[in-house]
Length: 479
Image (cartoon, rainbow, N blue to C red; front, side, top):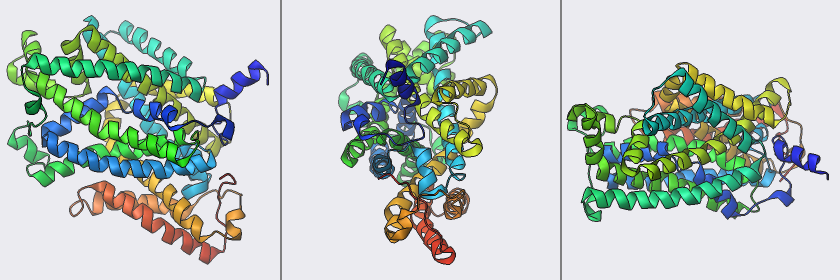
């Protein structure tokens, strides 16, 4: 194969077809990406928020539970991707949703990932403004966002190989700088390791009551609800990466490491650093003219404050950490977004201009989110999007592991795709409505309802539809 052919294949990156065996990777190469996409300042902020609400012990306990659930879900969807070689939203055509039905999974997951792309672009931008002490002007936006967008397109355009290489290098340096920052912040605070590893809730009682976190059980529920949405998104990303796995064990281990870093390591580090450094951060804001009460509120107001904290604590080192944390995640966000958009436009319009077009489109859509108020609207929908992506993953797993076993005769040989798999779509809608509206008073951890409905209702509806309609089940003819 000539070099132009190799380049074209690398750019296309098997976006709509199965990854061949010759291109498969081991757990270490996959883990650079599963860990890289979750080790961000946003996750450090989630860690600070949950531990300040619940205390670090309850926060870590909740994180461990989410890790187990997220790793199991990520392995389940990743295993299906490994067997078929297909990305998450293309996979949903064969398992759970049908060709036209996969428009839903591609649209929701794509919107979620592009939203994170926009959110973390904004975080980088504000971090640069803070470090360089420059005004938020149209020129600043054009220069910074323009450079960031060009960087993400160039790195992501050439497929999984380059994405994995960039993620591995930036992750190693990021973890090194992060360890240095943790030791430096704790040493500078004058506190002991035992005190920073055992702090309790930091918010006032009225604030905790407003969050439903005035009891230990309420604090635990709050932490799980905050963290579980990301587990659903990560499970879908595990499929995008799992299609490159050499074995089920490889993607299983990569999924476990990703969830462990997201829900335990970053949670603990975010909580410890913000707790140990809170005094220094508040003093910094007071010196800029704020009152001490206002400074305390600003210090844990949003992920922006975490970026500011690391710059205040570490100067150049903190700024490097900020750039490394966001850059590797942004490359992976663009990669998954381009795969979702590729499936979306193919399933909806049979339009296949090539994955590179959708790499650029994902970045353009992220910039549009930043230009309007869409990003604020997106933030209010993160919990809902988490419920939906978790339901998607549950339906795919139920279809592959349960329904496929039931129809293991001549029906598994049918390769033609149906337009819509109504049992999958119906299950998804019911899972969301029951989890988010009906059972919240009895089951405050919404994920439990959505995943239970997805895993148990879907097989019942799908098998019933097969019996009643006598139609064959559309499954991939790979794996």
